[in-house]
Length: 164
Image 1 (tube, rainbow, N blue to C red):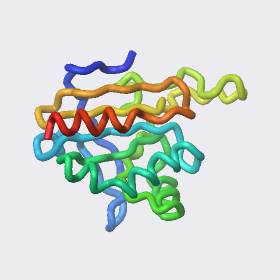
Image 2 (image 1 turned 180 degrees about the vertical axis):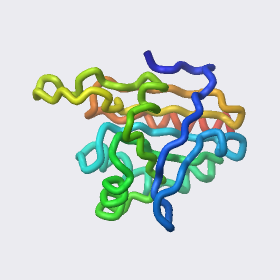
Image 3 (image 1 turned 45 degrees about the vertical axis):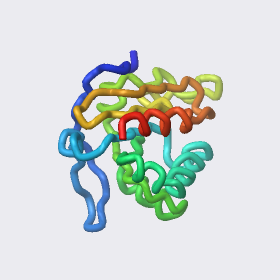
Image 4 (image 1 turned 45 degrees about the horizontal axis):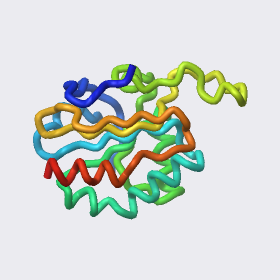
């Protein structure tokens, strides 16, 4: 079951690729300076995930002006994420949830990803959005069952305006 509004955001430490190579991203080190928008996507190099992160990359100043740090999370390894970002022009910081621990902690894992197409990859994150305020409390939670649907970015921006 996904985390709900009012829950304390579970801390995590994962790998990301910075300018100088692999580095760690620890959620608790980012709490307090800005609101955080965590965006889970099923997989790199897929159509809807690419569209979502490319559009966000183009409008990142909207989120920065609302005092929000935006990070993308997928179960892909950080080197695949980097290749994806470079190929598509994605500028969001991408976090590798390769072992699916964040996906499990936030309750957004598919038991079976796209079973109608015989894809039985468990642990793939559902497309989801969480806003974590400066105190580390979840203020917005949206978990989508269909990987083809996008989060309600108008509602996300409205909530960020309330928190700014």
